[in-house]
Image (tube, rainbow, N blue to C red):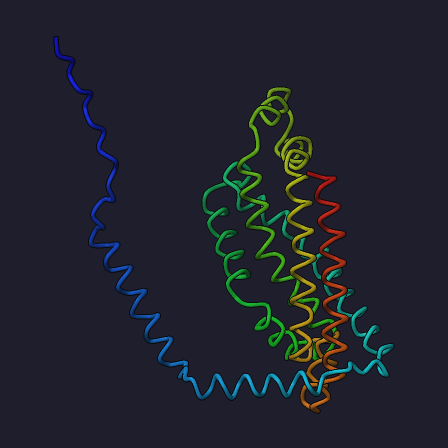
Length: 266
């Protein structure tokens, strides 16, 4: 009596790419090749760049700590910009997030308009916001704070709204069943349910804002970026290295504190 051999299981094969995928791949390849060629990459330029980097590091060591006190004050100004900007940005992001969420927006039109506004804030880079506010309010930390506020709204409002849409409907429905109004449901069920995620996103925003504040100073928005830009323009690379080291220490310290807080909250 012969036993039948089991049917061979054919391993799955990759499906043939669709025409749309071929268009995407070819388009990406074309942009990549065009971008690589426009960069004018050559062995000569890379070798010359390596030599210039060596010159930079040779002139940077040892770091010059003679201006450490004004550098630390500038770093404190950068931290102030980040904290104040993120605080106002997070506060303003919550109503935007409520208007962007499908389960809290009054109607579809308000939700669509709110999402377009938040997308606009998010699309415009913070450096451009800084340039706009430097023209509007002049040089200094205020321009940087306003730029961080706009950038934070674009960043936080989106993630806040996504978290609000993902909350469990049970607590909201229970409050609604007791006759609670819309604001009571939002304050008593929706925001408390979303608070852990909102806190974590806000802490990420602080880390992001500190890095942004450093760059914003390069266009006159105050902070340690002004010191770094001045040192680089004057070819004082030893002072520039000191500033970079201060930025590195502060950013790592803030990230560690933020990570510790997130572990306790989430």
